[in-house]
Image (cartoon, rainbow, N blue to C red; front, side, top):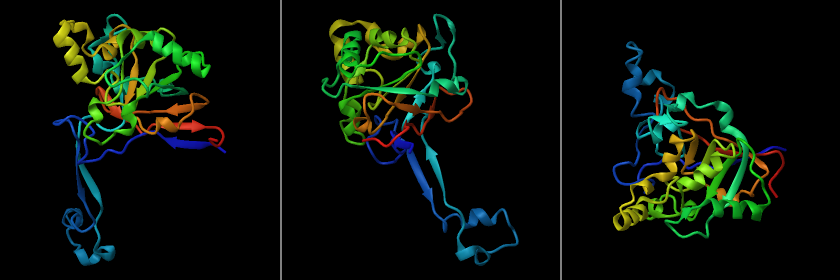
Length: 260
């Protein structure tokens, strides 16, 4: 029997899911609070006319498209991709990119702030016995995966550097993902390296690889530690937001048989 495994986090207020100033805010309006709003659509009705006196439950959300589990479009990284072409927005991302076989690379042992290299990727692929194929969706399992919502989440886990990102893209990968806050190493570590070396090429280097080869990545994945290395598909269709740099996704790992 086909099994679906949720690999997304909920969009939630009041937790350290993002840096200050970037966190979502959700206002919940319950069945009683909404009654006046509902009655405006039916001028001759009263609250007593509504079943159990209830209106509707709705929520108002203030958030960027980069809160919660989301898929970044190439437009997020730069105005161009593929060496100079216009970068596509989230509503232009090819849907077939978003439903492909998944591969999990376990980098939980790597220290916070480590920048993943091509050698790291090849060593892990050798360990799990997998050869990448075009359009494989490559998921990076980091230490940050178990820190979501905690004060150290944004500064936890490793990130993927420019060389390693291009190493994947040159093999035909077009969607990657991480359970960390960012595909790149946590900014606090990059800032320390920049202060020491003044090498601007390290700033957002994994994202900026999309200027050379357009690709998408999923950020804030969850539950990756419970996935096998391969043998599943990933579905990560984004919400279709006109001309946007990202879209929220309910990412799911799909198995044709029960996971042992």
